[in-house]
Length: 202
Image 1 (cartoon, rainbow, N blue to C red):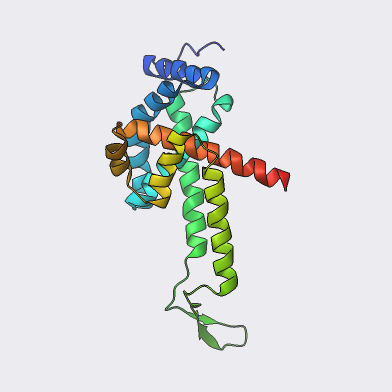
Image 2: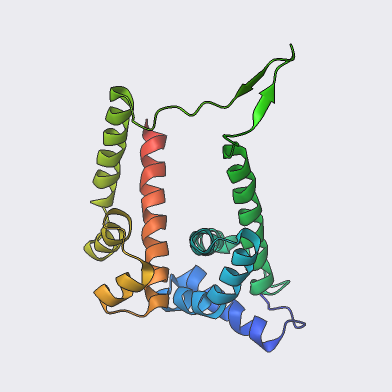
């Protein structure tokens, strides 16, 4: 595909990285794109959410969505423009979902008959059925994680089961932070594909 001549040199460089990632599955190209734009995306999302942990997770999600949909990117405009659009739209959806889940525990609600009542918080202790479902989900996730290659499996276990931070992961694996995040994205993508394939078979 011919590159838009009106793109800046930087945008043309990005496009060539996209081609390498999309057509050759070049992990270095994925890592380079993440390295180039991770901080910009993160600070944009931090400004939108005002929450560092949410911004960090949404940054990874944004790159995940962008990388999964590279086939839809065209060089009519800069990759960075396309990426930021994906990141901002995903963040807006996240904020909407979060608002729907948030209810004030102190707020009184007025019914049609004029009576008022407060929001009752259910017990935080799961009942036996909920505990069984939680255990089944954990077992399913473990089974799926076991299908990953050893390197990706270790990465996922350290991040999501042992709850190591990205910085701790980089130190534990002796890898650059950007590489860890790129590989974690790839591991999450593989997990997503395993789970999707499993659900399609049910």
